[in-house]
Image (cartoon, rainbow, N blue to C red; front, side, top):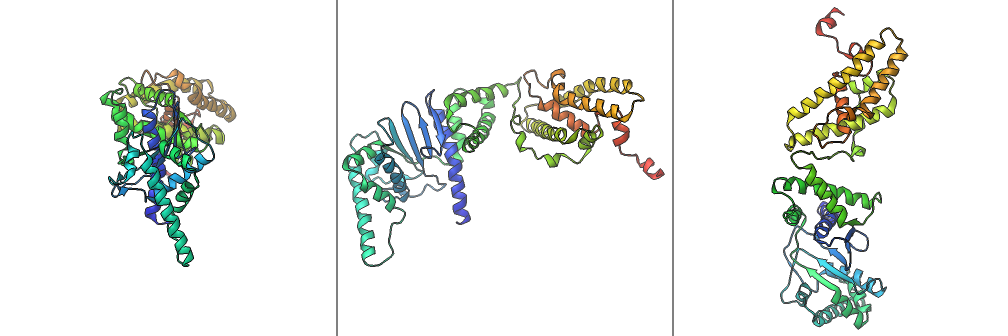
Amino acid sequence: MSQHSADASLLGYYFQGMYALVKLLDANDYDRISIETVDDVYLDGNVKTLYQLKHSLDSNGKLNEKNDGLWKTIRIWAKMLEKDEVDETTFFIFVTPLRIDESCSLIDLSKNNSNRGKVVDDLLIEAERVAVKRELARSEKKDIPYKKRWPGCEAYLSLSPEQRIDLVNKITIHPNNFNIKDIHNEVNVRIKNTVPLGIRSKLVERLIEWWDRRVVLGLLNEASRDISKNELIQYIVILVNELSDENLTDDYGDRGEEAEILGELGGNMEAQIDLVNGGIARKKRAAIARWQARNQRERWLDEDLINGIELIRLDKRLINVWDDYFQTMKFDLDGEEEKVLSDNGRSLLDWSHRKAYQEVTPVREGWRQPYLVQGSYQQLAEDLKVGWHPHFNERLKKPSAKQEGEE
């Protein structure tokens, strides 16, 4: 497969998920949608709709009854009809970026046209023509033509006249369809009447990010493949609330599995945990929280959702609350043996992860995710502004230039 065709396939698969988002935004309240189940996209509600998508960045050309992609789709739908897998509430949608050839009867499938007899006949004529051409080539010992088109033609020919009529009556063609480049605009159009203008662009970006991950979780069977309209609307409401002036978005709370843990280790943060014999599990949770907090802080700043001064003030509060625990611990343990120092320091480390976020005034009133405090403490530990062992400063601080010279 060429790089071009591989890229086109990847874009096609990605488009399936994004098209499903657009369709679910258009759907009724109790509808559900899935990707790569019954069809490319399947909308399940009072009416069941199967979508076959033909994605392309090139919209040149016209669709007619000789189109290989159309016949590939007809094969799929004809087999379903033949096996009695559809009922009167099921309809088929063929989505394409192409225009329909005005001289072709397929134009009737893009309209609410009840008279589709000519489409039934024209498809039959094309299927029979392909069959004759293949048989002629076979008899003359030539290369058999129409390898891509034939499976669809064969499936159509295998249907009874009544089944062909039933199939065609269930088909609608959506020509001139948008492509992957248009997704942001398509989503924006569908939410503009319910989402304030000032946050709409950021909301669309985050909604698409969430949807992309939600689809992947479904494909991995880590979540239901069916996504309900209610689930989608609930997340939009969450985003509206988070993007309001008094709240902040949570972009990394459920993304701990993405943290590059090894990249977070190797510095003072890990050394601080070693000083109190924290072990591997504490290092792992520290690395994850630090990755989450750092990325979240950077994203808020990049998107002007927060003033840098607010984060500086948060860090000062973190240091002040920690210092109260640290100074009393250091005083109480003066003269104690190393094991006692280490055990108490480990308890302080655990406090920073398990309880501190409940004691420190949050960065904003509506913010309640613990990883911001947990991870910010680990960054402060990296910078040696806080620590866990009573003597962390003396043991980890780099010697001054004068001290190095004396050595």
